[in-house]
Length: 315
Image (cartoon, rainbow, N blue to C red):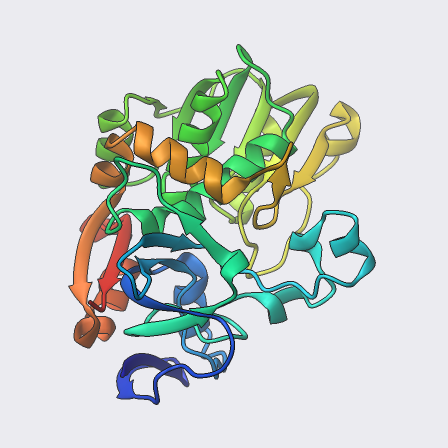
């Protein structure tokens, strides 16, 4: 089968043996390129596994599914406590990082990783289940309640989907974006967008991951408010001046996704995508065949060119 290979900051497509061993065989229909995928390339980090963790596809009987790309140990104290997303395996449990992922024609995953799609959700859109689950988990970490005002800083995929997740919980959402395409997507989703941030919010979400964004988030969080760190800080993290201490801001890092009240975040994400067809239409800006993976990565890295979510379609 064909699969994406990432070595020394270079993306190519190579022939690999079909996936063998335990697990359910999935024929990949769509796999999104995440910001973390771009960071591995930009930093020249080694990645032995096939990349790709935003995955949707079909089973051998044609059943459409999305993938929750986690294979926790199930035995550590955190897994036993229901915090499997914090498993001691860390990145070693993530499909597309330590295990072969979805930028290939096929992959195998445990049956527990399958997300059955609700009626009305196209399998070609369902690769958004994973990043939307990130936003849903972030809003759960924020303890967001209906009617609360929420500021989301960052108009990429995670920012837009976090805003959608906040709105689904009844939040009064405002979004800060940088690029015209992000603004257009936000407006298509019916989200409020501002040029300048004035005043403070009880809940602020950093979906950008830069020092300047974190400074803005800190300044925009009201005393006693909650700041959700939903971004990945690849260049390290330092807290802005004394704002956190003086305002007693509660900082809530949010990682991956889990289960709340018996419902997996990924299943909640699939349900929301099925209810709101605008999400897929607004966020997926580019689709490429697997053979064009290098071009797809270049497009995904060029936000000024209008890319929000770039998707590879192996099948």
